Length: 127
Image (cartoon, rainbow, N blue to C red):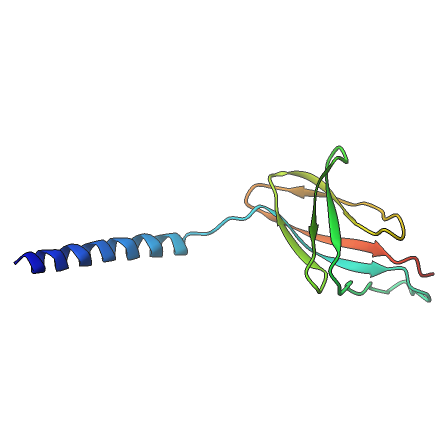
């Protein structure tokens, strides 16, 4: 009798846990931030319809707020892609490069529960 009650209690607990897990996984998981790709600009013989290639290497990105104050740095993956969670605000992004100054990219406006898409450009100086 005790064993039967424990089995029923265990099954009830297991069903309750599974129910909570299933409810959480079916609800949308909102994300807020910026997701993007770094592109390489600055190549000889650029034509008007030229599309810059992705910068396929790990790069450091400097994140600035709307006042151009540096908030943090983060790295891209080996293909130059990145994703960063941020609170809603306006941001600027700069590819960090010790060999030459880079222009800021942006502004990128981040809204609550939205992921802003960003193309960030790195100028290699080749002309």
